[in-house]
Image 1 (cartoon, rainbow, N blue to C red):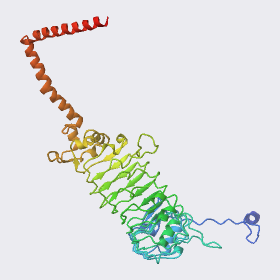
Image 2 (image 1 turned 180 degrees about the horizontal axis):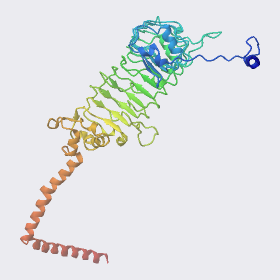
Image 3 (image 1 turned 60 degrees about the vertical axis):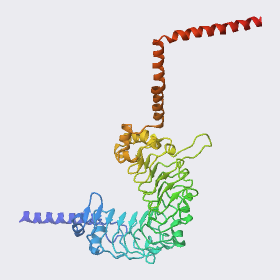
Image 4 (image 1 turned 45 degrees about the vertical axis):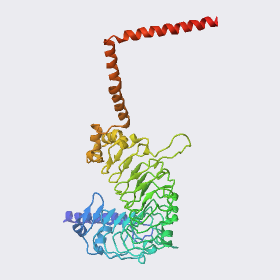
Length: 496
């Protein structure tokens, strides 16, 4: 009985001790000096969510692909799966889902958002305000109009005085919509934009509002105005973005080179494909563009002539694409040359890639370029080449260089003239010497002279010698020599 009482007493003492320790270690919630650190909420495994059962979740590459997977925008539960998930998808694709509007999107760390190929007609004001990491936004191939695309759709976070710009947005694709113009202030919330795509909108004219909007993008580097149905380009469009290095202006109605190219002094890449420019002659030649390295003028439906000085002011050009110009049959030998230094020699751009395939050229003049050997890729295929002495350099020099650098490009360089060499490859003509050079013709003429004159003369002389005629000639010569000698002696005596 005594032992039992001791045990109970000991247990009571232990309880008092543990209670005291617990009270000392547990923070007093009512004590204002006590700091309580809440536990961070547990992240939900995104790969196990319902969203990832419907869409493709590439966890390793932070990529969410919901193309053709949705009937509408994410539900609140699906947004919760994303915002509370253990992975932040940097790229989200929501294309081909028949979305009709863009709501105000919740805060999320997406960088690349693709909403193309939907039926979007409206965008909620400030729709992207909470996407602070957004860099690339693609809303092409939708039904946006000038009326619905207003500046405030690109509002950034709200501050006490005004809305801040979207801090990181650099690329905006508005192509393939129903835009006829742009609000002059459309980009006021995204002034840091570096890439703007407007292609395949029915502008027909760059009016003053659109001109103001585009020219105000001081940091713009790439501008795509292809297929806008425009026939001229205001000068200030290219004058404003001083860092513009790529201009895509294919598929428009330009009948001459766009005005204002001279203001695009930092332009490196220029594409003018599918414009109805007929020639590059006279005043319609490229202005001084010292930074331009890449120029493409392919599929031009009316281009037939490239005249002297057409590319003379492009002295840093390294790649020129003039392919698929079905009427191009004249290329002046002075198209590239320029006297830069004022000395006795002409200067030429350092072309490395030169495409002239699928045109209507018959002759390629040697003086067109001086350093043909520096051209790494030269495509001359599918032209009706003339295989005679007028095309001597192509046949006897250039085709060998093409075959050496890229043999595939030499296979379809074929003769169209004369008829006896039609469809024969120029390489075969060169290898089998089917066409002689003018110098070689002179050699043959010389050989004929030797055969027809010198050899008969030698044979006749040999026959005369055999008959002893040379003896008489020698005697006659000795008489003549004596007469000459006597006259000489007479003169000598006279002088004495």
